[in-house]
Length: 167
Image (cartoon, rainbow, N blue to C red; front, top):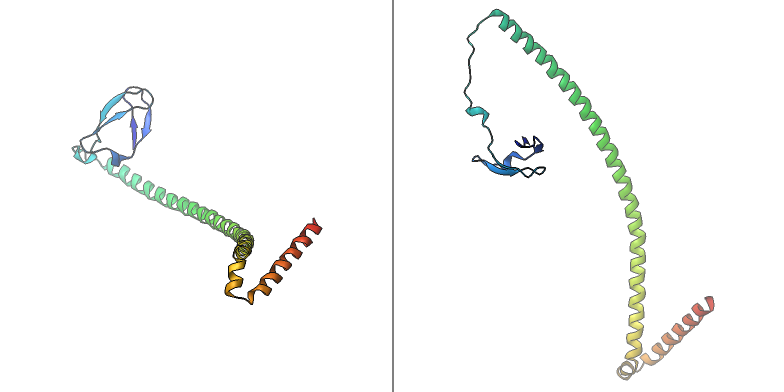
């Protein structure tokens, strides 16, 4: 609903559900004028009846009715064309979104792989640190574990030396 400020004549678009039946104080955002606005009820206005029964008036009404029927058909044709264009646009947008989603999925797959790889490496390093810290108590509980831990740490030293040689 468009409301006009009575002071500066600036027009505003306001949701009619925000104005109760009793009216509401409105403030113009342009000139800061405040006024009480009530919605005019069109159904409460009295109807007037014109008793002129000229045949000329009836003919004019028939012309208006036929013209309005033609106008309705034209409007329907226009709306049909607009709806077809909107459907075509929506179909194109949907296909574009589908393409971008598939690209995003491939990026996520690669990203997920590296995320899992990083988690695996961090977990492996944490396990090695834990084994090194608890090496003596574990050997006391499991005597056969000493040879396995010794071989593991020797292998890790060899990998470390290999990586240092590569750099």
